[in-house]
Amino acid sequence: MLLINPADKARPGFLNDASTRFMPLGLGIVAALTPSNWEVELLDESFEDFTFKPADIVALTCFTSTAPRAYDIAAIYRNAGIHTVLGGIHASMCPDEAALYFDTVVTGEAEGAWPALIADFDTGMTKKLYSGGITDIEKVPHVRRDIYKYPYVYDLVQTSRGCPAGCDFCSVTQMCGKTYRERDIEDVLDELGETTRPALFFVDDNLVNNKKGADERAIRLFKGMVKRGIKKHWLSQATLNFADNDEMLYWARKSGCILIMMGVEAETSQALKDVRKHLNLKRGVGAYKDIFRKIHKHGIGIMAFMIFGMESDRKEDLYARGEFIRKSTIDAYQCTILTPLPGTALFDRLRKQDRIVLNNYPSDWQHYHFMVGTVNTPNLTIAELESCMQEIWQNLYNKEAMRRKMFRTLWNTGSFTTAYWTYATNHNYGRMFQEEKAGASVGGSAWRRFMGAVYLQFTSKVIWLMYQLVWARMIRRFTAGAR
Image (tube, rainbow, N blue to C red):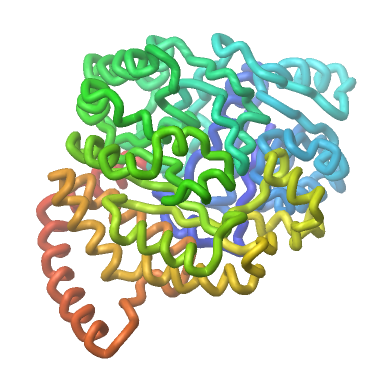
């Protein structure tokens, strides 16, 4: 069995660094569900260019933006008479389309479909479609990690599935349901004990649920990591409620939390209403500052997901959002263009309104990576939106801006490690959004350019000293652990 993770080589920004090439967790689950008499091998295009390898069955997963690449690879194997299977989020949202390019399509969660598929394959009776549905969380296996032969920096672990939020732009609820399903903490800790890399990414869509007692569960997890001596730097995704419990924040940091990723999305109530971000609306945009302060107090950095190109956005709103990011205490930031992914309420609504411009599917799926406009908004054309974003990305991801953020993070958190982590994160996102321009210096007036140059010269010496004292040792550890 050959498992393939396709990559978009046309936009290599996130493929230029090992720290942003994440192991395909779903394929590790597929491997764990496969009977032991099968030989299983992984080919990850994030690290290795595709070359044809013979197999009895070839299974791929893909995001929407990599679906065209997955279809190209499937054609090679189908022409060779080798059975092909596609699963994952895009297959689940577009099964009829995927069925045109693959022999078998798996929708939903793999645990509910893969054993039956393999049994049918052994008897030569494989079906065109298998629906995995929503899995009993107790049946989720430990990921089979021996297939991950590449130098991934992070081990990925999932402690829960499902999300009740139902944000307009997100397909998680369609894939994994609205019910928040929690794995047993002891089982999660057992799986953590099987990980070997020095960094960890909890891939839960929301690590701490918003129901009563969720923080107590998180504390049990973090305390368990400390008690078992699981010493890793880790990051995860959470909502604003991550700041609600000081004891939880203490144990999160004690267990190795270095960065928490939050869907802030926007700084105005109207923009949040545009995308049905009810959790943030309930807290209010005025609560952001205090929430960030509480998290920083425990030495944890904040990486904010920010969206541009909302229904109500005008040019001045885009620039104001960029300024909010620059002036706020957010440490790292992913600044994307609102993109209607298939399976979302946003996609269904805009398609019915005939508002999606890049709609020549499946070839146009390659543009659904959040870095180009796909929709003309009521106030902005695609060209206007992309022009504004190029300027905003340049303002946020130039050397001076990123260094100022880094030193502010150091001041707010008191942690060299957190400051470096957020700086590296911004550098990686800058590379993704701007590729060649990410390292550029700040523009503006001659005086500002002069002062920017002085600032860069001074901070270059400071960063070199900090690197020698703290970061070089940490990088050696992570590089050695990823091999």
